[in-house]
Length: 166
Image (cartoon, rainbow, N blue to C red):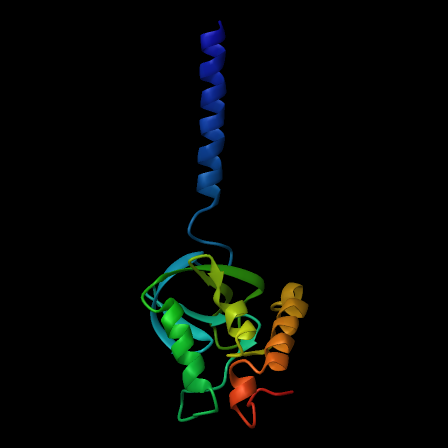
């Protein structure tokens, strides 16, 4: 009798594990939960191999595309590229799935590091909040930016005029 009970318990546990694994599939309500970055457009936007454009939530880096060459734009793009290009990234979505340009809005992580937060913390980006996307983490990112400003990290120490200053 005990052997049968042990097998039943094992079957139930394995069934629960399979349910959890299936629930953690590769898609969320907004889009893929992971992908390989095929191209870095600038400091805050990438293209996945699957074709989706992803705009990083809560950060805005100086421009280095479309003929614009703002102070620290190339550095922001290059930093982003060094972290994600050709690599598998994980995507976590906030309160909104896309922006007005149809880009996915996400927190992007690679090797357990969130790129959005690194950009703000190291002075490669300003906070950009467009309601409702990012509401739950807005104050966290504002704190990261303030710390980078005070320490003169990245663009805060290199640029006489920061393009995204409020």
